[in-house]
Image 1: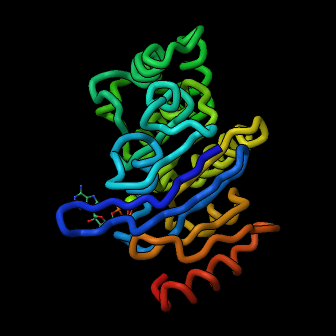
Image 2 (image 1 turned 90 degrees about the vertical axis):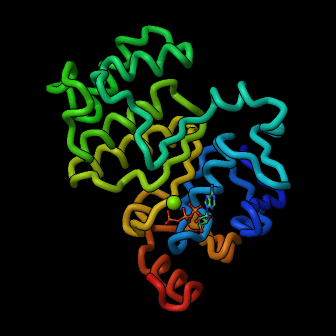
Length: 234
Ligand SMILES: Nc1ncnc2c1ncn2[C@@H]1O[C@H](COP(=O)(O)OP(=O)(O)OP(=O)(O)O)[C@@H](O)[C@H]1O
Ligand SMILES: [Mg+2]
């Protein structure tokens, strides 16, 4: 489903990615862990077609994303650090706008369902600018999945969410997984990674330093492997 081949990203004389090779199967839920500045968000941005690698390539469904950018974009739902929402629009207006961009059918119905799903029905008509950080993150999650993408790329999705919203988000990811959606999630939250993901990738200094399957939500294994590879930096 997702393949990266020898991705290298340089900015000036700084090397951010140093040859990232990845192969992710359809329906997998993958967590990318690693210290600050390791290159995790950069990997997501390259896969999301937001930035170009200096060399190397990304294939989605065996198609090179450079050559099939539009088609690939419609398959992807990307949740970045910044919400991408329009501040003075309500959640409903935001979701309808993004839904229309992606050609979603019955867009108002879909938008309302999603807003209900993320627990914001009460705030349907309030402008997003009046929302708290966690509320904005809830709308941003709904925005990222409005077009029912086959691949979701989530950059620290649990940040700022309260316990209820964490449960909602995990449920959304697992429901989408059950329908065959592929998830790649960058996170510092090992507990959520272990709860949702069946594969863990650890990135350090722009390279993948570990890549293993996770069974039975084995959180201890994640901590142990991470501590070993990052020399105690947790
Ligand atoms: N546009 C850019 N110009 C210069 N340096 C950049 C640029 N984008 C990223 N970097 C650098 O690349 C490195 C990796 O950044 P990235 O955002 O991918 O890290 P990260 O692993 O997501 O870190 P964090 O856990 O803090 O979010 C950092 O050292 C960052 O300063
Ligand atoms: Mg990051």
